[in-house]
Image 1: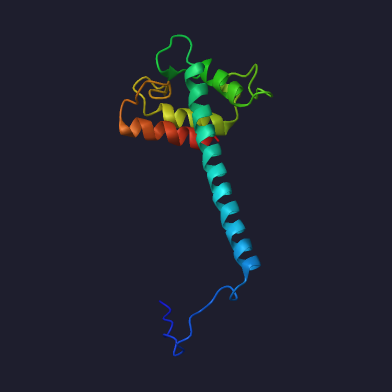
Image 2: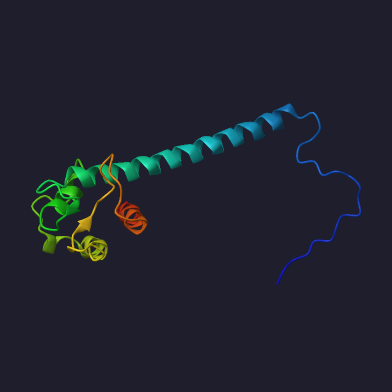
Length: 145
């Protein structure tokens, strides 16, 4: 169902602001500037969060540095880095992690040939193994945040 608005029979132009209203124009301009600033800030925060996630992924890929995170030690180290200063999972094992974190890991690790979390492309100067793997890495970080 669509709504059709009949054309106006009036020849008057619609004015949002009263003529010569410098205060109203200034307020509108200020509102627009604030909105653009907020949108930019949100976008930058999202980019920083995504980059922070990827940085923590490659930093915790330690033994061996193979672009895969294992569940037993590296994934837990990653979670601890992501939750500094509280370090949510100190002393935890994969089996004692909350179910949603276990599911997150196993879901994304299931697409990897070795059933570990594929982080190719997270390390600066490296590329993902495929567009699908790059999208999966972004989706993992987005879901985690």
